[in-house]
Image 1 (cartoon, helix red, strand yellow):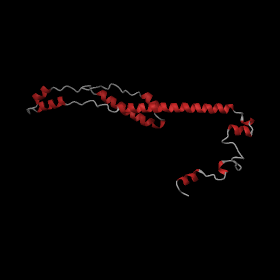
Image 2 (tube, rainbow, N blue to C red):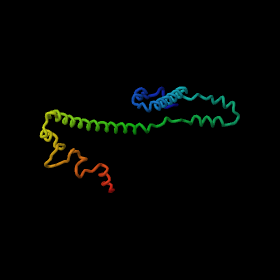
Image 3 (cartoon, one colour):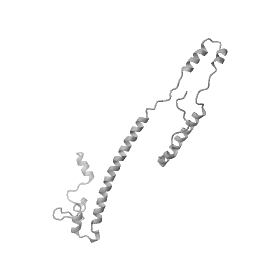
Length: 178
């Protein structure tokens, strides 16, 4: 009568347990226990319902047609196995995740190449303790002191310069508050 019989859980609990964060171990344990109870309850029942001796009841019950009516209803009853209309969604989600993972890997490989170029550049430089101010200006033009084209005040940090605005001030100006 049953379309498919569940003989055991198809979940790989040990592989799943490895992926559960420590903060959710107790919830995971409760879920596994509920699942085990369900599987045991299914296995405790026979695969098909017990056969009914309709002739015995026809002899025993005097109301004409009552047992025949029950038999017809009982034989007509079928509980279908639920349709699987979630697996396609899960497969689509897995495929989407795989796509995101591969895109992230590609982007990471690009970042790694850029960082390796930066490392190679830094290794090719003179050690800082051997650099002159001119060597530093040539290696890092964006952060070197340039008193002629970009004069700065001591201690030469952005906060101490004329016209400096903090993040808060810039945000307030962007939102129109003064």
